[in-house]
Image: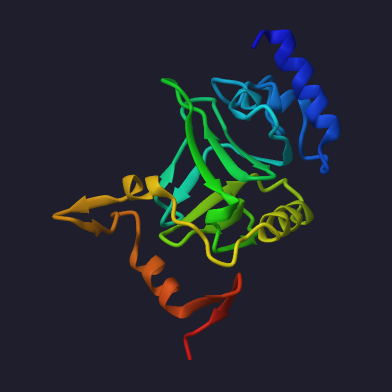
Length: 208
C-alpha cells in the first residue's frame, strides 16, 4: 500500500468505527493515542484483512502484552508502543520492535472468557483461551467505559465451545515435554490464581 492508500483507508475505517478510540492517525501509524511518536514499525492498518474493520483501539507505552502470567510480557523497544486492535473477528496485539513488530492474535472463536481491570499504573484487558490467558496492558488514561465496552464486544462473540489456538504451545517454555513456569511468575501470581476462580467471565473469591 502507498502512503496515500494507507491514509485513505485509515480515515475511512476510523469514520466507520463504532467507538471513538479508533483514530485515523494511530491506524495509519503516524502517532499513538497518547503520544505523537509513531507507535510501531508498520502501520496497524496493514495488518488488517481487506474486509476487516476495527471496533476498538487500545494502546500502552512499555508494559506490552503478558502471556500466561501478567508479568511474563513481550514489551516494545525504544520509543515504540503496543497497540491492541479489536475487530469483528479477533483481538490483534502489535508490539513495536526494532527488528519488526511482534504480533499476537487471539481469534474471538478461541476466547473462553474476558475481563478488564483498572489501576493507577495501568489498566488491563484479559482474554482467556482454553490453554492460557493474554494480558493486554492499556494506558491508564483510557476511560473505564472504553475497557468495559471492548470487553463486552468480545464477550458477545465468545463461542459455547472455544477453539484452541494452534500456536499457543510456542508461547510456553518446555522442558522434557512439560511447560516450565517462568521466573517472572512469582508466588504472588500462584497464590492469586489459587484464591480465585472464573465462572462465565466473572472472577469469584475462592479463598474461603
